[in-house]
Length: 256
Ligand SMILES: Nc1ncnc2c1ncn2[C@@H]1O[C@H](COP(=O)(O)OP(=O)(O)OP(=O)(O)O)[C@@H](O)[C@H]1O
Image (cartoon, rainbow, N blue to C red; front, top):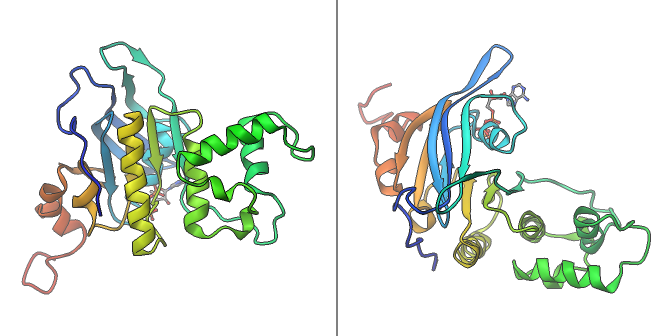
């Protein structure tokens, strides 16, 4: 895998754009799903969010997207100072479409980025715009395919292209590596690396695949309702918190 870490990684907030999450808390009914969650996400960084099932990863994403009431603050600081509302691109976890669905990638994309009625022939200008968006993820050849006929990796590529239009400040991907084979994983990670260095945006993704973290993530956040550990992959993966959360000491005379 040829993913290279960003040169700004670890350089802090000075002069860089930064999403600052401070003391975030979320309740669903009586359940405290997120508690005092704090971290910073800088432009050009890939940050991986890890944690067991039910740790609150998707809830954290939905909170950053503004869909969930919360306590604490989420602030986006522009490069050079000043606050702004960030544009966020979001790729949800494994959406599925009916295999027989006649809607094409072009129809789907056109409906999402313009008001043009899907039942009318797509104007040439709109088709060119969709092609341009798909080209960002090397997916131009998919434009006339039916959504239902796409493979998992192809669908993910189309959704990624959609999340990049308009170009966001922050790209959030919920478990993009789940169900992707080793070649698909390499292609996706190479593409994310290309996107973050070309557009200098921040990428926050959740994953249960720890083996490749060290090759692409600048930072890892270990979440289990609160942030248990944050830092470079090698630090988080060798931490006692990581071992405890994933029960790696069981059977070795470790703590139960
Ligand atoms: N809309 C909701 N209403 C009530 N409870 C919810 C809601 N959304 C999530 N939860 C609960 O919040 C907790 C965290 O769920 P969440 O989906 O954020 O975890 P996750 O870390 O993304 O899990 P996974 O790795 O399994 O995808 C779970 O106990 C879940 O049942």
